[in-house]
Image 1 (cartoon, one colour):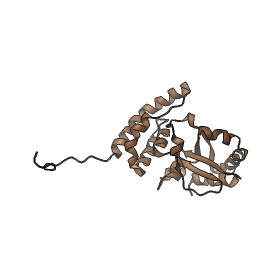
Image 2 (cartoon, one colour):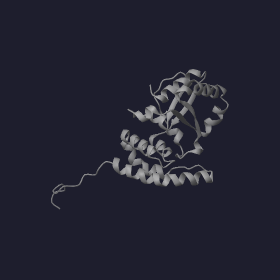
Image 3 (tube, rainbow, N blue to C red):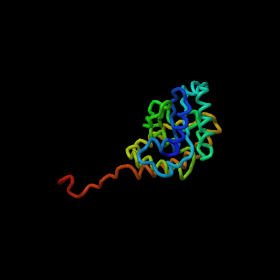
Image 4 (spheres, one colour):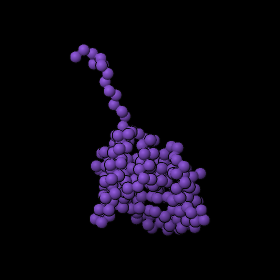
Length: 203
């Protein structure tokens, strides 16, 4: 059992009613992709994105917040925690991301888990110019290389937070990350074969 699964199973054990979470960060990779790396298994926290229409419902769910606190208390000795819940307007992502979310096949009693579609998840990894995030993007493309051909369009559709100071800060991180992602796109796009003499007959 990786750390993300352990955290979520603990949270689930404290819940008494259904809760839907859309994971992102390394927990979404550890649970949402085939054969995650040791680094993804070892991540010590779980992050989630809240869609605008789910925020109000979760904010008033006292059982969820009590369960979150109980989970963090129970796992504190091992340095594991679930604390980061981000409003979708606080991250770089595309409009309509919630409708494209992908189920995470972890069977739990109360929790239903998803992750953003891979293109959207990659955009969230472009919020800081960090080698770890570049490595995570490369890992995702290694599992779904067909996504490489969709990333240029996804980056063009990226939606930034509306708060000016936050937008300015994230755009400063996004631009160098875009250059790195463009390198990865070239690496994962199918190589075009070079025509050989005679392939087209006599011209």
